[in-house]
Image (cartoon, rainbow, N blue to C red):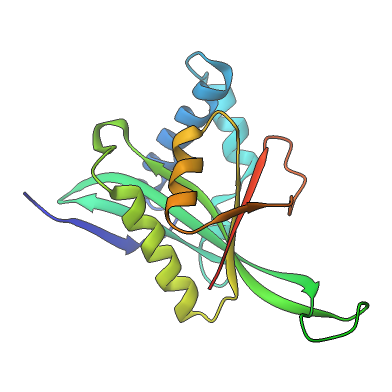
Length: 174
């Protein structure tokens, strides 16, 4: 069997746009419990700009088996203010984080470990960039995603954003 390969790709390439649209279709369809309309997919696409998933603000990974794109995962680079562990109560430190987004595997490739490979590569990239942690948010209905994040070492915690669709927030220290 052809191995699964993970690579950084421009988020506006034809392959990246195609898998992103499949991701948005899946996300919206699951949320509404019915097939997503083209307008709903376009609205989500406009709300989460792909341009942020390229240097210097982020990256996008694609998983392939041969020429077939099986899935994707993205990471935006953010700077956050957090309490400094060794300082007084009012002290804080600026830390660089990777905000994980667009973790998606096509239905035909689920169960093959593609999502774990994508998450491992995101972590490798984050470490190579000197990021302090990875964080992400997800919805309650995305049970498989929540299980994946816990399985690869993320811990559920306090909210780090006010995304109206986020119901669970996870973090992994690097």
